[in-house]
Image (cartoon, rainbow, N blue to C red):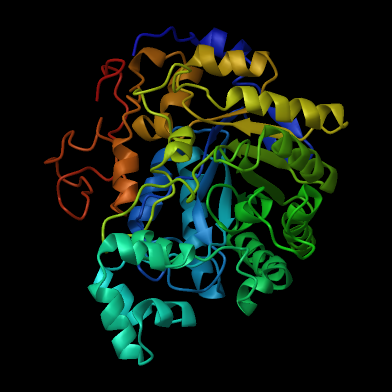
Length: 476
């Protein structure tokens, strides 16, 4: 990676390595590792040694803040994702916090991202869907020319795809082609209709457990394809007090925040991550996001961490037996743009929207810190964002994955040894398959050395190699 790096004195004088003091939020500097799901928890959602090693490695680079991966607020099966929906998860999370404290020398603040998500099912085989999952209606009986359930299913199964697709309702066709997915607008189901009544308490209980585990704060996950982002989205057409106009769509996120704030001690940080733009047809725009940002700031939220896109609505069709993945379509690309970019390029695509949102928050009289991320990978880029007041804190996920020491190297004048992300999304491909996430720049280096932790397939490193003074810029 050809770029100019600061010497130690230039770094000391920079905005990037200056402290943050904005309300409750105080950081040693303006460097931030956003939440990334590494697929290292147990199937029951517990912290493992691999989880601890993952976060220890980032902490060794001493960023201002690290956000622990999306962690489920409900005590429900969700595969190898961390959970915080019961007190039994607290001891493992406490061990994680203590490991980060040690590895960063106490310099790095540690937040945990807490998330709710609705049901998403795997794409079924055609026969399985028709014979087991399809709910028969009078319309389907009429189309099949039969009354007996077995005869109706047999007739539907015998139809050519084109005919079957014309017969199925839009939601049933989606369930066949992509797998069943719940929406916040499915208010005909009681558990969906009652989400506004139950979620504030569930999030508050999760935040209380984060306090007990020793975290410095929580990041409320209001972004991408999940429950809270779906309430914020312009596609939320619920006809109650929680859908339609944007003042209704922001109501539940504000109620969740209020419940969490009331459940945690005064110094405890409560921020959120949300979208600067849904990046889908009929979705929320930057104007909506600016409005939401002002409402969040007015309510007293401690930071606004901005992402973009990553929605189910434009995701690619999964293979049979796999679930839809919300980062495979155009909005997903906006969330994690690659070097195979459009004319606008992949680096810093979220900066202009973040600038508009921050300006709206400042014009409303609030000093809430704004965190921006998305293809940020050089000192000049980060410093330019801060100098222009587009944001207050610089988040870097993929670049921090490529080199967890990159902030430390910049701060100490050793930028020439930074391992630069190639932005090909090798890591995202592993995430999509729910495989342990690693980086192609380091996952085979020194693989045979004693004590190297390897992925479950034995082919990849589980953590980045240690920093050595002789490493070359852009090389593993």
